[in-house]
Amino acid sequence: MSVKTHRQAVQGLLPALTPVRFVTEDGSPVKESADYAEPSAELLREAYRRMVLGRRFDTQATMLTKQGRLAVYPSSRGQEACQIAGVLALREDDWLFPTYRDSTALVTRGVDPVEVLTLLRGDWHCGYDPAATRTAPQCTPLATQLPHASGLAHALRSRGGDAVVMAFVGDGGTSEGDFHEALNFAAVFKAPVVFFVQNNKYAISVPLARQTAAPALAYKGVGYGVRSEQVDGNDLVAVLSVLTAAVEHARTGHGPFLVEAHTYRMDPHTNADDAGRYRDDAEVERWQGADPLARLETYLRGRDLLTDEDVASAREAAEAFAADLRTRMNLDPELDPLELFDHVYAEPTPQLREQRQMLAAELQAEKG
Ligand SMILES: Cc1ncc(C[n+]2csc(CCOP(=O)(O)OP(=O)(O)O)c2C)c(N)n1
Ligand SMILES: [Mg+2]
Image (cartoon, rainbow, N blue to C red; front, side, top):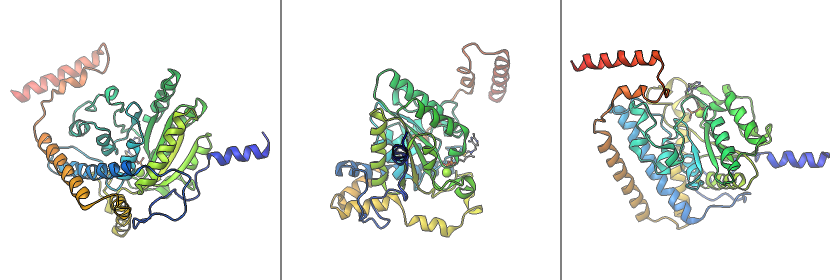
């Protein structure tokens, strides 16, 4: 390869030097034009409604932990631009591979919120049908969903289809071996997968600077030959436009694409975490000023794409959604703990049979 061709190949993979942005923090359009097409006005209005709903869902889920209805909930408050754009960029027959952080994305995908929260209230299964919803179970072991995502993407393409896989991962998850193996496999086999890194600055208490020495996580794609980009993750317009281009890139046979979104986790890691032990209030307040929902609202109002009535009706719909979720989550579910053993092996091992008997005896004694 000549030096010129080599340079062009490298440049074709490199992310922008600063994150792609369409809207400034105060909601006005950025001056310089980006290399990506702005989504349609109708799609942005839809995204706004989904963001209002998504945020309301998220705060409701956090409240449900306080009422003891959920064992735990990892909030994505502040990350709604990513949660909503990551789903709106997809077709219904595309696949989504979410992490534990991405419940709002699942709600945006149309999965029943009670099903989304089923695992978190202590059931043994993920709550929804992954095949029917084209949504893999929310993955708690970091980055293990990524080789699965690459494999599924490769299989979809091998069968001649043009569906795409969107795989979410956190900043901490990019340090895992599985992240690197998944990128390498996808690049070599041109698997149609978009790796979507939500860099929310922390892996529980570990800040990004202690996690990586890379200038940006987006550069991690380049070494594997994966086209990479970085985007302002609190700018819905930018996230949606970049992800739409990434999905198109994958769909049209150009292989995987990695997008790093710079965002911030406003709440603690989960309701069981005390974020005050590793970050100060001033930092959180600074990010409050970059709120993705307020930013989109100001931008759309500025373009006369959103009226007071639109805002009121989006909020009303979100309240009704939360009220319905509350009502249904306050019904005691009928759970049979013995189901836990049903789908481990086609033929249960002697150890499993023994454990099942022990649990059955314990449950009987409790009823007793
Ligand atoms: C393989 C593995 N190691 C450790 C953990 C424990 N753990 C759960 S969440 C987390 C931090 C992940 O941070 P990040 O990938 O940035 O995602 P975020 O929670 O910020 O969305 C860790 C270390 C785990 N779930 N899986
Ligand atoms: Mg993180």
